[in-house]
Length: 441
Ligand code: 5AD
Ligand code: SF4
Image 1 (cartoon, helix red, strand yellow):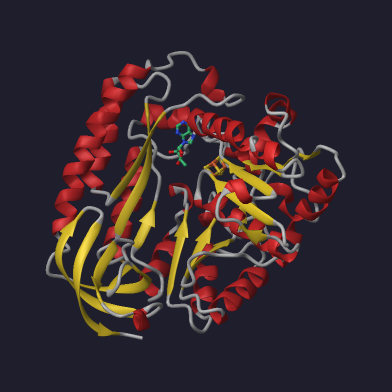
Image 2 (tube, protein in one colour):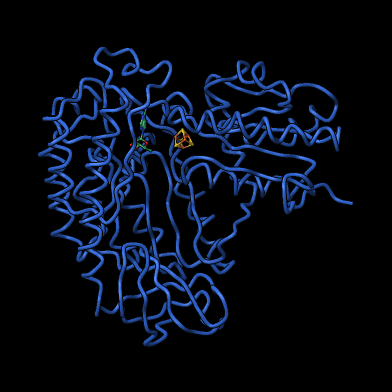
C-alpha cells in the first residue's frame, strides 16, 4: 500500500501555491492524497503567521492531529511555511509531536527531511536566509485542484519592511524568478489545459528589479500573453509604489490581462501611512487608482486595510473610510492590527484597544456592504465573459468573470474550460445569476 499525505494550508495564495508544489514533491516520492487526516502517514500544516489568530489556529490543529500517532505510530507531522520560519525550534518545544519543520526557503529539501524523520530524528531545517539552491524547487511539478486556472509564483520575499509586517522575516528578501523559468512553467500549464495564469508574489510589481539587468514587470506580462493558449492573466499582490505607468498601460493594452486588481492601501491617513513606512500618501494612492480607472475599462478593484494601527485616531480612520467611499472597491479585506513579535510597530506606543478596533471595523464593514450592494447591481443586464470552472449539481455551471466575480448559469459539462458569454439576470455581491449566450472559445 502506498503512503498517504494530508495537507492543511493557512494564509495567502502564495502559501496555497507552495502547498501545490509540496503536493507535487510528495507525488514524486510515491505519496497519494488521503481523504482525511486520520488516514494519513504524513500530515503537513503549511502555516501563516501574519496575525496572531493564524498562529493560534495552527497550534490547536497540531493538538488535534497528534492523535494520529496513537493509531499509527510511524505517522509523521510536518510544519512548514511562515510560522515555522518565524518560530523555529520554539515551535518544536511547544509542540513536541512535530517531526519535520521547514519554510518556503527549503521546500525542495522535503525528500531528505522525510528520510531523516523516518530514521527517528527531528528534521528541522529552518535557515536564516534562502539557500543558494532554492531554485531547485521549480524542477518539481505542482499538483492543482483547478484544471483551468493556475498560480505561478514569479517573485519570492519582500523588501518593503512595512513596520507592521512579519513577511520580510518569514519570506526573506525579494528574489525574482527568471523569465525563462516562468515561461517554461506557463507553457507546461497551458499544455495541460490551463487557460488562466495567476502570477503570484508578495510584491509582484517589483518583479525583475533585482536582476543584474533589470526587466520591467510589464515586459513579463507581454511575454506571458504571447504564450499560445494563455487566455487570461491575473497578478497579485502589488504595492502601490511599484505600480508604474508602464504596468498600467500593459494592463490596458494586453487583451488577456483581466480588468481586476488587488491593490492594498492599508490606511488612509498620511500620518499612519508614514508610521507604517508605506512610502506613499493618500493622494498618491488615489492618483494611482484614478490612472487605473482611466486606462482599464470597468476595472474591479480590491484592497487590504488594517484597522487600529498604533496611535490611529477616529480622525485618522475617517481618511480610511474616505478612500473606501471614493474608490468603491468590489472587495475589501480588513484586518484588526495585530502586533507581531520583532516588528517595529509592535513596540510603538499608543496601541489601540480592541474595543476601538472592533467598533471601527464594524463601521468599515457597514460602509463596504452598501458599496458592494450598489456595485453588484451595475452588473445586471450586462454581458460578461466567463471561464467555466466547475459543475455545481447537474446542469449548473460556475465560473468567474474577468472582474473575478462568480457567475452561475445553466449548461452542460462539455463547456468546462471554455470561455463563454453570459447575460447577468440578477446580481448579489457574491454571485451573478446568468443566462448562457454563446461559447467564445
Ligand atoms: N496586523 C493586521 N493585519 C496585517 N496585515 C499584515 N500584517 C498585519 C498585522 N500585523 C494585513 C495587511 C496585508 C494582509 C495580507 O494582511 O493588510 O496586506
Ligand atoms: Fe501568511 Fe504572509 Fe506567510 Fe502568506 S506570506 S502565509 S500571509 S505570513
